[in-house]
Length: 121
Image 1 (cartoon, rainbow, N blue to C red):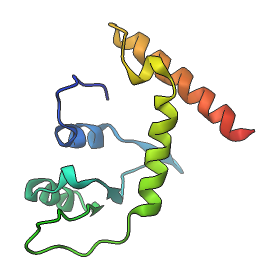
Image 2: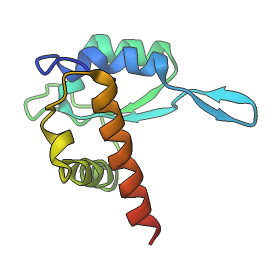
Image 3: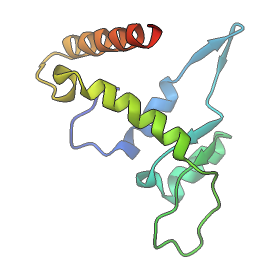
Image 4: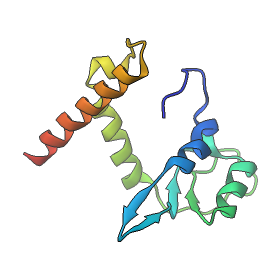
């Protein structure tokens, strides 16, 4: 999902979850666990995820009064940050110079294909 630069990530969480589809064995699966960062710490987000029966891993803020226990996020975070670093290697994606959404999406798909080819070597 592409949104204006000033839009906070947490506002895009549920529109992205609504569009999330994985087809496996002729069934659409929904996410079971989400690993999110500290920007998503809010009671409303946690409540909405619980209503959808989605477990979450959100690190506690440093000044949390009643911190929840969560599993360590380091292996998962490294994977996500590495993928973003690979995408940032492509200048046209890192700084969006395109005015049309179709052009930016095409650049993103080309970069993704190049990354997959590099991984398969």
